[in-house]
Amino acid sequence: MSRGRFITLEGGEGVGKSTLAKALALRLAQAGVRAEVTREPGGSPMAEAIREAVLSGAIREHGPFAEALMFSAARIDHIDRLIAPALARGDWVICDRFADSTRVYQGVAGELEPDLLRSLERVATAGLAPDLTLILDLDPRKGLARAARRSPDQGKDRFEAETLGFHRKLRQGFLAIAAAEPERCAVLDASRNPAALAEAAWLTLAERLTVPEAA
Image 1: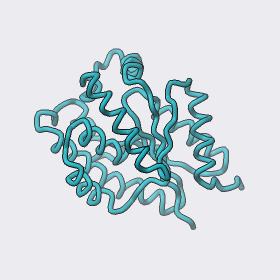
Image 2 (image 1 turned 60 degrees about the vertical axis):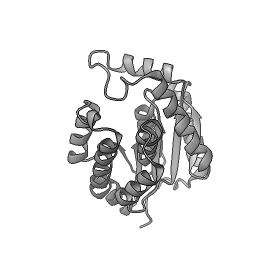
Image 3 (image 1 turned 180 degrees about the vertical axis):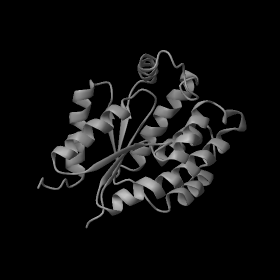
Image 4 (image 1 turned 90 degrees about the horizontal axis):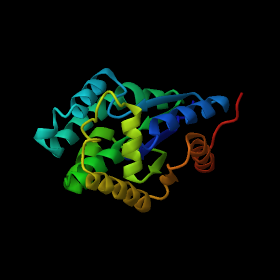
């Protein structure tokens, strides 16, 4: 059995990653490909607990390095319990955020040293890298407005509450990764409606990766 493919979705707040992940999984299912949809931080019980702690703001006072450590711990458990087993049995995995988010949120916006983050990433991923990363690009003002509409009764999480300047740094950070790694990354205009974005993402996926024929 051949290894499955690993697809990650990246971008700032409110760009539509979760909706796109579900749409791509549906298209893959229609093509006869089983796909796991997951997210970071999260995807395993321990990683979900870390997600709750970080997004609540409980770790913020300890600084971006503490957040990066927490995300790395969550990533190790996520890979061990969900991502690696799924890929080994031939399933595809679509993950809402992965290591690029740590590079950007804690690295670019949090101003952690790139060498430090690279060391953490090597430990956390043990060499696992996405086959394709779709970076959803959107004006952060529009993304934050979308995020606010999505959960009006829950309030802003740890990162949604940051300044517009912070979110502009995130956008530039993701675009810089895409420019540095064009073989892995593709930038998509996330200002489009969900159906149009899903179609563009599917065309990119089909162009970059070989989708098996349905049985």
